[in-house]
Length: 202
Image (tube, one colour):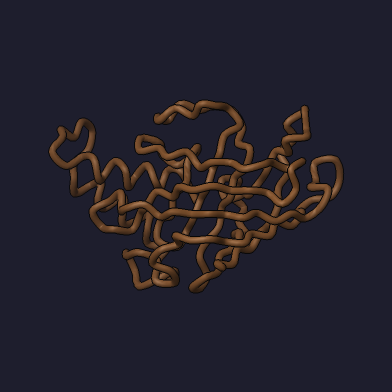
């Protein structure tokens, strides 16, 4: 999921009761509608995801290598994801932060990772779902600060969409912000390895 989408929602939600500096509330709402229009296929227009209204629960995620060569995953691996969908972050009810933990089946990939519970980040180092699009980004750096300051590469970036109730998967896109990737804990060179994935709720 594009972090800018989460930032748009956060800005619209927090502008109420504050002074708009370079734009107006109607203009921001118009921008929001334009940004969200392509997501209408996920549900019934501008609304929460029609395929799955709440992704809270236990998920089995299977990651499969995308590339071959030095930057490829050595093998497929699975992730036990325990996810919590938080309350809406926007007045339209389409954006939610996502918290919880990810635990890889292979400890050389990573152990247990905690999704940062941030309230002032645009989505590039936290978890969020916007309509049916989900993005989870967990930086290697610790502690993770609650702001939009870059903190280096992500241990894992999961980008995908909920396609039906109890199922989500990675997206095929030419936009690098839609890529899912991991940096193995066993890799001292911090090579970014891209992968595709599917997730099934238990």
